[in-house]
Length: 412
Image (cartoon, rainbow, N blue to C red; front, top):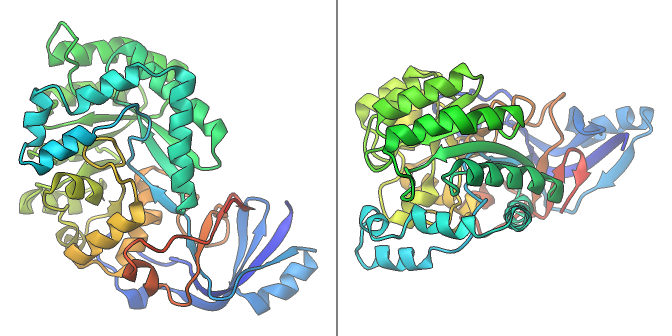
């Protein structure tokens, strides 16, 4: 591709110089009027005034790509928590919840995660890969250029391996970057003859070595909750995963506390959900290096409280925002809608929203090469057809990007 100069953008929101943790204010945003991005292959070479970059671009014999009038550019969004590799639908569960049934009641009656497990097991490897890629490409069109994708709907050694291979195959069917995570410790499968401890031992002894040997994932997740795996059980499993060289992340404090404490103890990369986190958990997370990931889609889908993002930020925590796109509790999968609504209820500034959707999410995935528009980082960026960045969250996700660039290549 060589050198390319893109612009001029009405506003270029770089997110440079923003802190990784704590509260942020909109007056801290760097906004470059009539800005430009000079790219070299798949990376950003320079950021600044379009006119000032023109002379450098001409010296590099760069291709000039003008953009449409009224265009606000931002880093590509990063969705750090999804479950988009699945089969089937849980519309029935959603109707039951809205009729008054609880998540736990539906699961005990044969719905919930186990319903999706049965439908996912019916899918072929290739079919599941295609389904995953279709969902990833929808997210890419909506401006999400990096997507974490969990397994967790196989719940056996063979089926979990199949899902991770499907995610691997899906990578060849999308321009988005897919980051696989093994969530075999989602719940204890109903067709497993032993108890939860025996199931986790099976995963440690048989599945994790296969995942490692085939490079199917570098990350291991576990649902740590009274309705899934209690902290004492999950601790043994996750410590074994860490000893094998995996990074660990946790579904934590969704229905009961204890998960975030374990995440801190294990020095996990993130603790995700946190809807029932209290003051003690908030303070502990803020004092740790664990990224707190808010999942507003799950709160909307379940009709429960939002992650206490405002309190976490004010305490000094690192807060990312992800979609949790899954067929059960968060079927919408629209990250911009969810983040905009979370901002309304938790009183988040635009700077906090965009930090949570970009470089703070990148940190949760240990990807320091993206999430801001600055020299040396990947040329992953998006453009919205407005002249003021505040219009984006104001329209609560209705507004979608008119252009998406991935690795310096225009995708949308």
